[in-house]
View 1: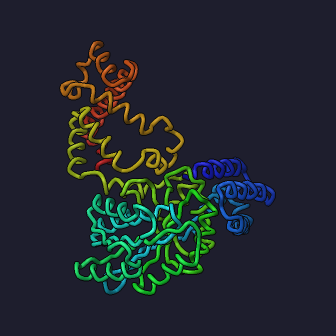
View 2: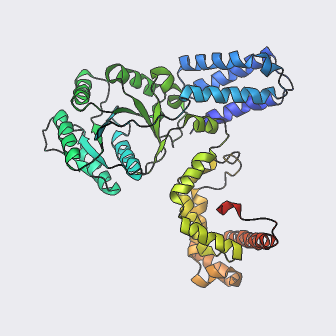
View 3: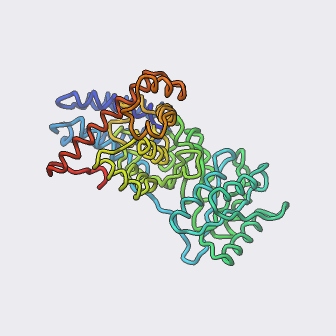
Length: 439
């Protein structure tokens, strides 16, 4: 996501950094390019215009023009204004003082509302909440079945009513069930619509009046760009929703919706969908997103993902292996499996400052090829790779569908890594260093 915008902005900032001093003319030229980059990213033109005006106003201050590093100062201004544009800080989900809290999911058909409801339920369950999913979309074929399948997958019950039940009655019945079963959050998957029509909008208004939700979340597809902003504005006029979930942020979206929707509606983005998997929903942090847009990475989110997915016992075991320089290919497979659990590799690389572009060769396919080679080894070969001679390499290559050169490359890299471990272990014994990656 945001790749095109990131590339364009970095190109602008590179020119600014190369200048010893900035003039009003330099800043004007840079702001024209930034504005063009925003419009190409499908940012609402009014939003782009006001954003540029704010950045330019700050950048023309004497403190920037006379700064020792004016280019960096402008980058900081853009970074700060991006954060302000997207909401300054993450907006937490609000809950009712007396449970259960009702959360309504609304939006156009095809925006990912049903899957987002399940993802939100899973996320809340991981936070020690007891959610109940509600199949209140009685119009879309298989919508109820889809929610039931997702609910079973994540271990969250789904409330469904007999065919023909009015959606308002479904919502009321679900609230009653939640009280009986001590469920503290009720997530209502309401019907999507192909466009903003009075009949369907009246239905969600009646549901809102019946259950008094603590949150109404508008779900929209980030791929739709400015269209998402238009539909959000129409929904907001009727429902006055309290938050936004942007789906498909893992796609090649240009980012226009993420940069426009809060400015236009005044409502914060609360969550973003980052994959099709049920764990692919993240809390939206404007400051972290601004850093990623500007190619600065997002180390905080990366660490949080690692803490949530990497098993502490396995990490300690890996540390011991590193310390004794006895790390094997089986250990390597365990580490790869845990990294893959953290999410798509390309997204993880974007979170490491400066790494998004510097390591294009490391991708999911590369991981698969490495796994195929290792799985083609015998257990003793994985434990003692030094015994792998020429004939064994040919057999491993044939078994993995790779070339002998690929096998040689992996063995060489692994041998280099083992040598590095031994060197680090010796240095630690001498008191010169420790293993900070496990601290």
